[in-house]
Amino acid sequence: AIGYIDWTLGFALVRDIRSSMPSRSRRRRLALSRYRLRIIVISFIFAISAHLAITIKYNYDNENDLENQIETKIMEEIMKSNSRPLALGNFSALQEKPISNISQKTKLSLKQVDVDKSANNITRFITFGSPRTASTLQFNMVCVCFFLNMKVHFPSLANTTNCYSQRKGNYSYPSLDQPQVMKSHDFKHITNTNKLGAESVVFITARTKKGGYKLAYNFKKLGNIVGLTQDLETLSEIKADGFLDLYAHFFDLHSHYLPMLQEHYTLWGKLRVCCGVQMSKHWRYELNPATSSNKLEPHPYCGSLDIDAVEKAFMNTTIFKMIDDTSSLGRILRPALKDEALDGRYCSSYNEAVRTKDLKFDQQLNSV
Image 1: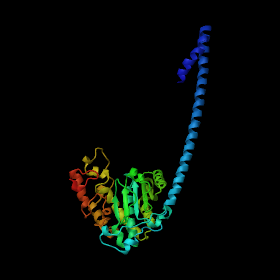
Image 2 (image 1 turned 60 degrees about the horizontal axis):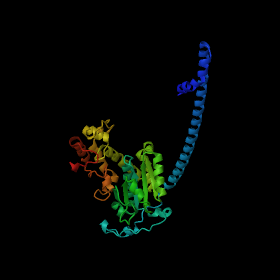
Image 3 (image 1 turned 60 degrees about the vertical axis):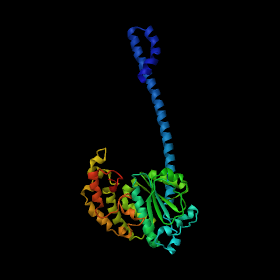
Image 4 (image 1 turned 135 degrees about the horizontal axis):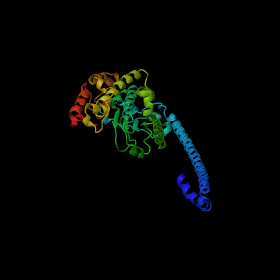
């Protein structure tokens, strides 16, 4: 650009010099004129560049300050919401007249109350997050912790706790005949519901801390109650045990439950990764390369596990034995909700089917 400006603008300037001076002097003056012109052009461009750089930095700093202010406000809002409810559930009517058939129970009549006063009427938890944000881990932990809370305060209703996944539909709060934990990835429909109800608490998963704060802020802005926010960045720092401690505290569980929960989820985590319809894609590829169109690295530890031994140990945990596998809660005792019930050999049978029948993600044993 400098060269182009030098030769085009300098042409008119040196034209007269070239026609009126001796050859050697003309060349000398011509060179000097070009040199001076080049200095002027460079100085001009440098001045413009410096001005643009200062302007860009000023705008960036302003945007950064504004973003930091917004994030600080969001964090303050989330910190306020991350305190656990004073009491969970309003199941007195069901507790007084327990009936074996849940469909015959009188439906709860829960008064709609102001959000700030709704902590004593929480009967439904919704776990929301994009796929691959450890949303199933959160859903499972929330479900089990809610079940244990029910076990203490409403023991006859504990095994009626319904934990399920919902893809689309109406998320507004109906009159329920049982405590619920619902998992959803459907942001469009769940936010279009507007207010989910004063008896519902939303738990959130996200990839980043910032993403979690913004999601929680959006839910709160719609008038919803937000529980805990779990993001992959924090999960990598405090691990599953760290969040398990937070969920246990949120549901006001006695400290003696924590070792039981840690044992349960240490084994469940291995099954989640190395067994079933939603196993690690690296392990599935290692079992059968035909299940993926891309070449993947082998899984770091699945191949070294005696998966049947892990499955049997998981079935022998205190938490597993507390939950009735035939109840509406039973599916959370599996690596994924779509998996079949564990029997001590389910995982090895499924892994063998991956090897021999090319089972892909979410494909069940009975589908082949």
